[in-house]
Image (cartoon, rainbow, N blue to C red; front, top):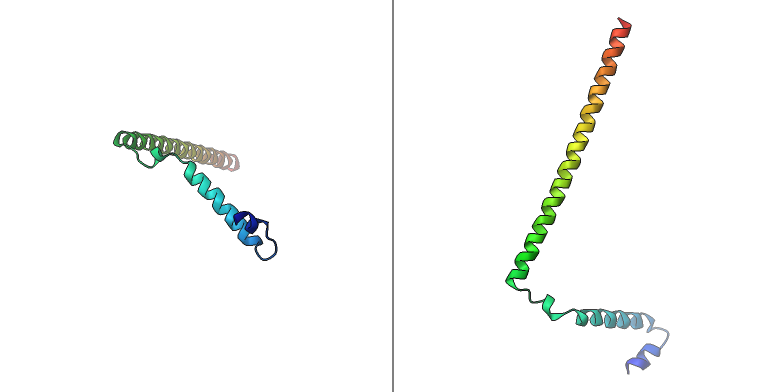
Length: 92
């Protein structure tokens, strides 16, 4: 029945694609291990620690990037002030 439905043409073209997509989705869902659905407390705690560690790492990276940008801005400000001071001395 399914084979004859898949072989049909014309107005059933979109239905054929939908059925094929549904079959692919079901095959992927069935291939997932059952263990992934039932996590133990220890596994959950380990994943939580891992996620916390990743978050801390991202926070440190963002803080370092912010600090670098601040230093760059301050350096540009000092350079601009020095340049303005130098110009002021030359004109007077």
